[in-house]
Image (cartoon, rainbow, N blue to C red; front, top):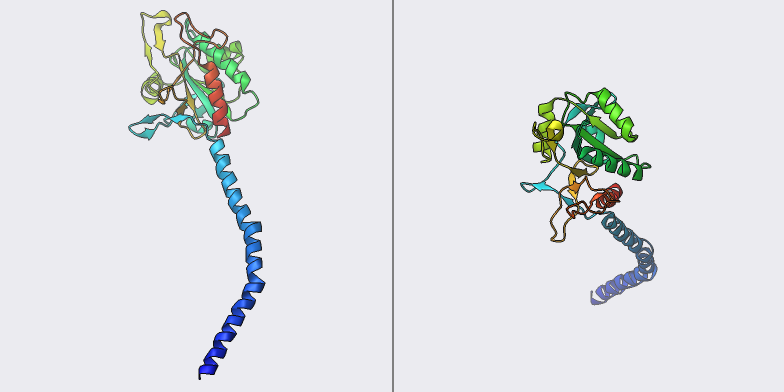
Length: 248
């Protein structure tokens, strides 16, 4: 019985030895040629994802990333435009009115310059909401678009119910808008632009303290550099950040 047992052990050891000689080199070869490459590919993909991360902040309200509220208005072509028309696009939001005698013309010129910078990008757009919808009909908005050279098919100048537009401005984006008889033009509004990513989230770069700037100044042009009060332009920063979001 002892010899049989020993022969069994010897037989098992011999099989293991043969298995090792034949198969282990193949396993090692497979690991070196396939699995490591696969791991490298995964690593490269992770690095690519990281390099495509814009580094721009999500604007949070009560701990939640702020998303564009649902909206539905009529554009300069008389078509109904909703927030869904901007899905998959990076875009800039502004509130304005066509008879504005102060900041709107400067904002519009800056936006047209941005439009021309990204003229080859089908996934870039602008959303302009009038705060004087009673005057700014689709026909008036179309004439305004022609006057300023607005050609981007994703740039919609929109009009609708005043209450809805003001709620979108003041509550949806915290971009101030109000009817004020005592100010030039009869309306007062923010001169800032909001930047929206392809998924509809409000984004911005961070300041030197690591806090999101939230909005971009829309009045001072790149050429001016600063305004009369020494406030620096942010159009160049907005262009840089649009480029980053287009790569995300």
